[in-house]
Image (cartoon, rainbow, N blue to C red):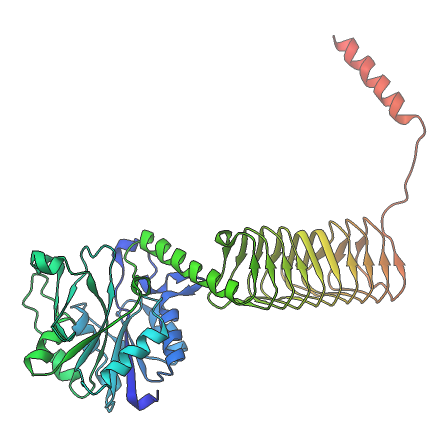
Length: 452
């Protein structure tokens, strides 16, 4: 598919008042990515380079996301219906002679394969003026019905409230997504009227107008789940559940082991290698890449982090943005890594915070260690050399360097450089007073007895 053959108009001007949110509806995330971003990614997959996002005048976040993706933005100043919204993109598509794909910013699950079939149908010998994407609904409810003729051509789209009992029995429903013949698209849309109860200009009227002009219309079916849209928070939760089910199936088929897939949550851009093993209750936020043969134990949370092959993570490990875990490294229980590189074979196994730091290859960081990276004004770097050993309950006050092979004794507060192969200990010498505990208990018992 080349740019001149198709352009996309993505409708994203709705506020989604039933969401009860200050955030525009299409900006609500599904699998860690705004719904609109999913639709824009679909256009990337289809190689549709010319695209227009129709936003409202009061949704700057929508416009910003669209422009960042390379799309043009058209503003629907008044929200007067779907046909009116598509017409808002006419100026941005001046000179485009190919087909026009109309999609919706709140239906992020449509597959590229389904859209390709619709585009192929538009270019078929039948030369339909409009190709509507439809689906067979388990519960047609309030969906518009797609009424087919004897030969399978689309005769009409009938809204549920206007349907006869016979038409209401039809389960083939309108998704709203369609492909228009670009040669007549703007003429059709300009002819759409608003003589209806809402006084709005409906995109679905393009079918009746095309047939009145003697042109055929067609339907291409996809799975019902592809056309799940969002009007409420409950819809958003249902769509997220469907998207997560898809991602779990994808990674299971791709060579990942999950002992309880229903408890693992992915982002749209999660990347997993082969033979990764994931225990229950793991969350992958955006920007996570996991190498081959990595083991992830329960109750881990990762975002914007990179993990190399053979690492072992968790349980209860947290990787924050900028975490880079090297091959064969161990990140253990209640360990948090932020903007730090843990190199090959290093171990950070217990109750530790590593932030703005490097942990060298083969180093061992003991339980309770903290890199004190923030002084209230600036963040500073801690460098732990290869093969170094950091004793338990150590505070490394940045900026500070621990050289290769150095040892830091347990309980130390390190504020100065520790040279390679040196021992650093800052705790006070132990003092032992023989018999002190017994004398203390006797004293306290006597005092208590005197009070009674």
